[in-house]
Length: 500
Image 1 (tube, rainbow, N blue to C red):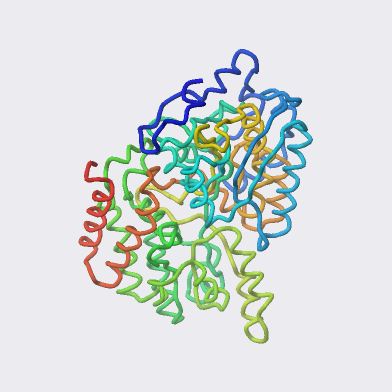
Image 2 (cartoon, helix red, strand yellow):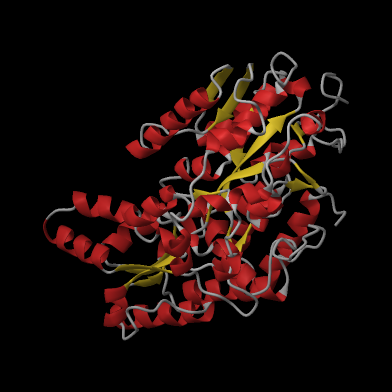
């Protein structure tokens, strides 16, 4: 197994394009599952709330038996794993499903020992970086959707694709697979995927003379609706988020940029190369101009938008002082929670807001309808960086097969995401989720429109620093729209060494 046992690779050296060694070693003895084992009758061209509901609960899966076809259930070994599991603030069902997974894994593979650490979202990346430098990393790690590209680029991760654990690439969203691809090589498997939806207050729409049951169809409509609401009712129309160094900002601004045909680089194209800067394209500038129109010209968004994250939109929305915003399906539960804590006249208003809360598709633009493709991916670490210098390849495969299965990618994504494996949408558990999580079908229907951020080590700085800075420069008048976009382009080129 080339380079699987040595400890001489430098983190900054070019990534070796080796085939995932254990899949080769086992090919002659352990047949991989065919994609037909999961009956891929999921037609993404029909994706809509009605279609999602129509396929939920239509198929059953024997996860232990199916993964046993990849790694025998009596295999003896050990696997170490780091991930962000449920913590105190998470709902009980998240804890219950996490516990149920480890019980199911133990039942399916009683002879595989597990060394598992649940690490908070904000601490995981830094702890993983430190462990890699000390050759003390786990065999398997689950990271937020773009967390892996940094480590793949430095040669820390082993190539990994769905076929290595018994699935087909067709079992996963193309947008999700983009996020695990670095220089043409797949280095992970999506575990869960998430997209957001457009939220509005139907009563505010009616009071402003708008159709209460129809969201704005286009981003141009958002600008017009926001102005009409502000002019007629004196409240904020759209919950613009523009805080610097905050992920909430690009998650809500980039869908508009992509809709107008722009981008940071060419991440919105079918086959992105990430070699062309598009932050100063006409499409990006058009999106930026709409933000300026709402904030400066119309004054129809919160004056605090420059320091707002989505959290700052919640209070005015529940108070009936904000009409539209972008958020996850969990926002409805948050509004219920806020309403339950209100008293007196505030309670009456909050209850009315919850009753009039609606979810729809994020508006489209001249180029497309788009949303940020979020979620997490599971990765295998190169042995030389793992504590003990070895990776138990069979135990690793068993864990990943179960975690990314239709069953568990659904159950482990229960409260706020969607199964990474498309087969998960056909399970009884997806049906239960749709029946119990209001508006989940709407946000889930945005998945085909999902676009991942540029799959580059520099993506966090581009999205969390450069994009918000561009917005701030234009909204404050420090620069014109053209100047702000050109400044952002220069910063991206400098960040990437000027070699684009």
